[in-house]
Image (cartoon, rainbow, N blue to C red; front, side):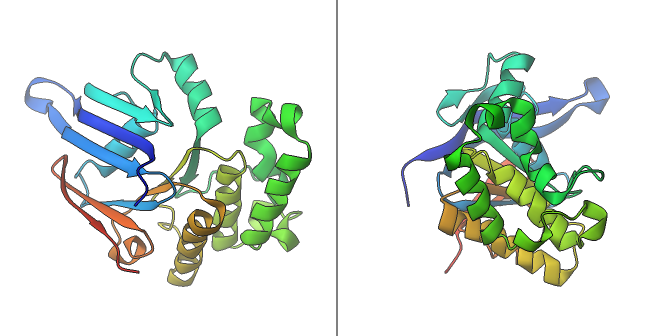
Length: 236
């Protein structure tokens, strides 16, 4: 296993509420996420897996502890700095796809880089080649002119994956990415996430409660009651 880390957490705690309503969602989590691997974070509802992902991705701040992503410490960053950091270093794939219905598949894929200014600065040969490679890898070449309503659920999630991969983020977080898909589309999307790791060198961290989905990963981290209770490699 590679020693390079895409992200790490030390002593991570997260609490919500106070007094009688106090909930400890994370209870001292230590975790290393190797670069170039597909890691599944599993656990029952309320185990803290989504809270952990939000803290690792800079979407939420832990109560105590530290997080590093792409070699940078997130604690101490203000909201503007965190927004810029996520834009430049983190990709997201959501259960609900989050595609804009009035835009074509191609426009949806390019949208974050257009908004960030990356496309204006670097929409040259290298970024165009990466776009073409991702689109071909994900089987979207014939669907680029279609709007989301004209695509199946699996195709919409492919577009969302392409969008997350285009800027070559240090890490992609996938939050229950197959939750709205049938079994055939789920298998297709999970295979594509694994393919992005194998062929594009991407780092993917997926939150899921589905054992079948976790079988596509390289590593599985299991949470219960806000603590890591198991970590294992998935047999090839």
